[in-house]
Structure formats: structure tokens, C-alpha cells
Length: 190
Ligand code: G4P
Ligand code: NA
Ligand code: NA
Image 1 (cartoon, rainbow, N blue to C red):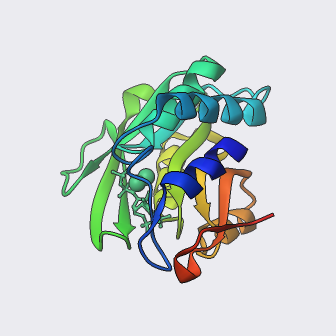
Image 2 (cartoon, helix red, strand yellow; image 1 turned 45 degrees about the vertical axis):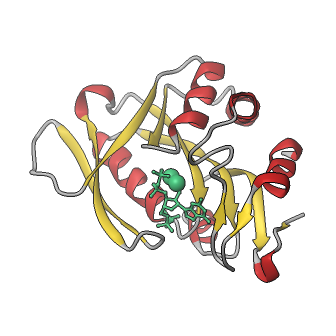
């Protein structure tokens, strides 16, 4: 997606070989027009698949997920993040470890909003090692719902999340694929 790549080049900051800061348009300040284009692009790629719900994670997944939900005319659920959580029957829960933040948290979705009749599109802002995606897949599995695919705004292709999801047979659509962040520069795949 060209406008996204341009935005990454003009406003993204390469913090290290591993981390791209995009606080100017995605993770802190949000560019609504770009989010609308991102939602449109996800909808184009996943339309006609019988998607009934979009599932993402708070906080940064919500903006692109809502725009995709608007285009696909389906509700958007964001998994809530808790530092600790007591087990309850009416929740689907999964643990997720963040390498970026070096913390473990628990993701939860209320069983009220998702069940076995749902066909889900997962959306997230970043795909790095795939831990967030793995936890979301676990939650969808607990609901007995099926997965249409995974829509990612920015994929860091040099980390192993994408390869693992491909291996597991999931359809992954990433709107920007970053080959490398070496030497303070963003280089894209393709
Ligand atoms: P993984 O889920 O793919 O394994 O990634 P990881 O544990 O490394 O990611 C933890 C958090 O950091 C996630 O956000 C993820 O979106 C974000 N992240 C990963 N790599 C980058 C990067 O290069 N740049 C930026 N800006 N974010 C990155 P989160 O903890 O869920 O935070 P939130 O922003 O949604 O609140
Ligand atoms: Na994030
Ligand atoms: Na995220």
C-alpha cells in the first residue's frame, strides 16, 4: 500500500534495527484519512469471505480495525489487556508475552460477543514475532469461531511472526512489509 509506505518513510522513526516508531500516525497520534484508506484496503482484500466480526487488541489495533469494520459492515471486538485476571466462565482468555515491553499480560474477550457461528478477520497494527496473533488465534479457538485471515498494517518481515503464520496456513495480508531496519533505514519487501 503506497500511501502507507510513504507515510512510514516520511514520519516513521527507526529506533533500532528492530523497532520502528510510528507515533505520528498510528500508535499515539492517529491519521484518520490514512486509517480510512487502510480500512478500505483490508476490506478489498477480504471482501466476499463471509466475515462476521473483526477482532483486534487494544489499543493500537482499534483504529485500523474499526475502519475495516466500517467498510465490511461488521462489528469490531478488541481484546482487552489485563496485567492479571481471575478466571471466569464468561471470558475467553489467553496469555501474551510482549518482547518489546518485556511483560506478560492476559488478553480477554467476553463470550457474549463471539461464538462458533462467527467467521473472524484478525487485525493488528504490527506483526513482529507473532505473539499477539497467536494469542488472538487461541481466543478465537476458545469461541469455536473460524478465521478468515489476518490483516496487518505493518509487518516486520525479518522477525518470525509472518513465517510462522504462513506455515500454519493462515492467510496474512500485510499492507507494508519491512525487510530491514538496518543502518537507520526502512527497506521494504518487493
Ligand atoms: P508480536 O506480538 O508480533 O510478537 O510483537 P511484540 O511482542 O514484539 O509486540 C508487542 C507490542 O509492540 C505490540 O503492541 C506490537 O504491536 C508492538 N510492536 C512490535 N514491534 C513494533 C515496532 O517495531 N514498532 C512499534 N511501534 N510497535 C511494535 P502493544 O503492546 O499491543 O501496544 P499497543 O500499541 O497496542 O498499546
Ligand atoms: Na502496538
Ligand atoms: Na498491537
